[in-house]
Length: 228
Image: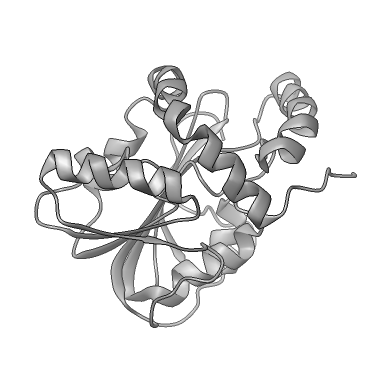
């Protein structure tokens, strides 16, 4: 299967800078219909020192527990500026930095939790990004992912494949990716997975074990709800 080549990282930065001021308005519909309480689910599992990768406009900020310390990294300066305004409005002290998910500017084992919501679908190399998330997590640290993925229903998958012929080139956005195999391959231990909306939305809760975990052949990666 031939995939369209996505835009360069600099082009992605320019694209998201242009989209920054309309992003929240555009996401409102999709949050209500597709992702429902996904952000609340991810943030409610966060604890300790939290890194949010691709924090965007900071839509997750109202959902975090009051006692966590939040660091956010984002490729787009315009998105980051809105996140800073949101943090100030919430009265939260958040360390927000411009940066690249594939080259996180943090030491090994710097965080207790890493959150990434609705962003691995657009990061050019999700393998590199997940590897970096593992690197900056301490042993026992939590990885919490929310994203849209390839559907389990063939007609929906076919539509996703057609749509991403356009969206990959325009915005680097993929609809037929799935993050769970990448998380497993990176050596995380899967605590829970949940797949919703005809299999197009997935939530993943994983932890970084003392040693890399390999999923036994034929074993289930964790608890599931909804279509598998």
